[in-house]
Length: 356
Image 1: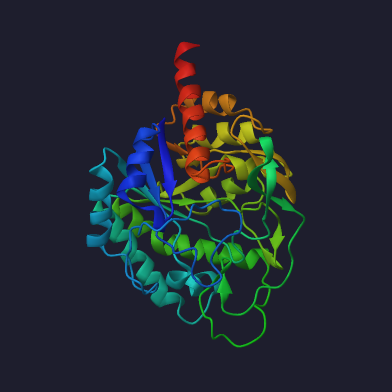
Image 2: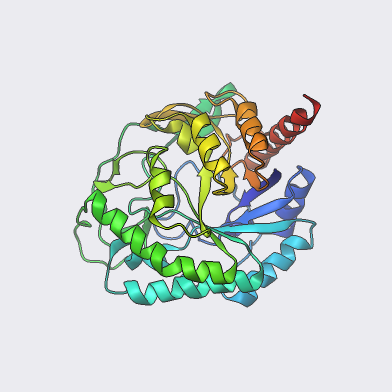
C-alpha cells in the first residue's frame, strides 16, 4: 500500500505538496475541477481557504486539460518527492451531455477520449470519475465528530428536483431555461454508462490509463428524483460485468460502502481487491447508514480500519490509499490538522501489520 493525499484544484501548490510529504504521503490525487464555481461547492467538503493561488489550468472550464499542462503538474508534484497517481472527476463542462444524453454527447465523448490520451501521454495512470446525474448532494455540516469537530453527514433523503442547467450538483449552464431535468429510469442510466464505457475503455487501454468509478455518494437508490448506479456493494460487480476491459476499474470509497444500507463493507473490500479491480482507495470512517450518517475521525466510527488494511494486505493490494475526507480540527489550519491526523493513523496502522 502507498499512502496518498487528495488535493483540490486551488490546493495544488508547492506548500501543500510539501505538507503531504511531511505527513508521510508518497502520492497525490489531484482534482482539476473548480468546485467553487457556480453551484459547484459541495457543502461540508472541509476545503481550506487561503490566499495562495493553486494550480490553474485555463479559466474557461470547457477548455480540455492538455498533455502539456498535465505533464507540468506531474513535474511539480515529482519535484517535491511525490508521484501523481490520479486525476479525480471530469468537469461537468466536459461531459454534461454524456451524462444527460444531450445533443453534445458525441462531441463530448471525443473530448473525453482526447483527455484520456493526454493523461497517458503525461504519464498519469488513473482517471477517477463518478457517473451520476445528481452527484454528491444532500449533505449537511455540523459538529459531528469527537470533541465537536466539524464534519459532514446526511440527515435525511433529498428528492428536490434538479434544475435545468445542472448536473452532478454543479451548474454548467447558468442561462438554461426555467424548469427541471426530467427523471429517467435506472435502466436508462445503466444504458448510458454501458455506452460510455464501450466508447472510452478502448482508448484508455491504448493510453495505459485505468478509469476508476466512484460509488454513489450518498449511496441512495435515488437522489433529486434521479436514479443512482452503485448504491449497494454488489452493484460494483454489475459495472465490472458491463465491460471486461482491464481499464474498467474502481475508485473504491470505503466510507461510502460503509454508509450503504445493504451489504458488508469487509466482504466488499475482500471481493473486489481479490479481483484486482481497485485502482485506488478512499478510506474514511463513518457512523450510521444513509440517509442518516455522520463522518468521524478515522479511529472512532463504525469501520474497523485496521481490518480493512489487513484485507488489502492479504489480497496483495499495491495501490494508493487516501483519506478522502476528515473532520476539521480546532486550530489555525483545520483541514491540514485533520488530514495530518488521518495520514499518521493510516501510516502507523499499516506499519503495525508488519509488526503483528
